[in-house]
Image 1 (cartoon, helix red, strand yellow):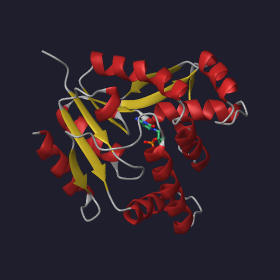
Image 2: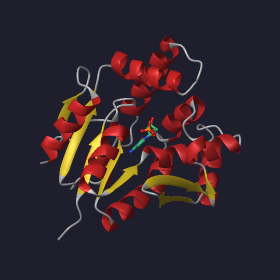
Image 3: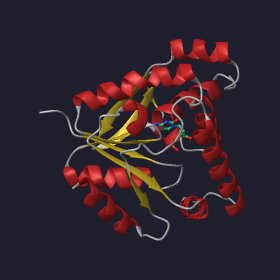
Image 4: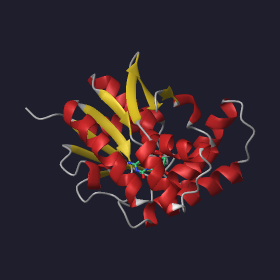
Length: 219
Ligand code: DC
């Protein structure tokens, strides 16, 4: 029997990771946060003072980057050249850079096999932008999870405030809109709904309601 692969795609801040994690837990299968791979590479670029537009330097960095995933107590950890960088990839700087480097063909090609290999070897829920369209077009279940930009920005803002960050709602909204624009207009594997994906709009749903809606669709 083939592996169970569930694809959850959608824009930044739609709640994909929380929902995907909950679905994976309910079903006792693995959760793969594909955005963390782009984030780890973005961190590598930032640390090396390489800008996304410096194509040759980015290609050189790819040849030097080893990105791996480890699961510790059921939690996904991202390992960059042997260092656990999980707690360092959630900053606004890394978010913006991840969105920019993810538009580059060489970066997408570099991370594609890694995602496919994990999906081939494990029953898993993957969240990202292009899982249902490019990474796993044959995934058994595909969800496109979205919400109004203002709702996504408000959730992010509340999360950041709860974490003790000092941020303004308008700045969070601007970042969300910037990433939406970047992620959906790039030439290679842009954010878009796969034709066979079911849309869940969580604008007016609570977290529990969204998890239940997604769970029901997966069946
Ligand atoms: O899901 P996230 O916010 O952690 O993703 C960070 C960036 O990585 C996002 O702005 C676009 C890119 N990304 C992508 O291009 N394809 C994916 N499957 C996942 C993320």
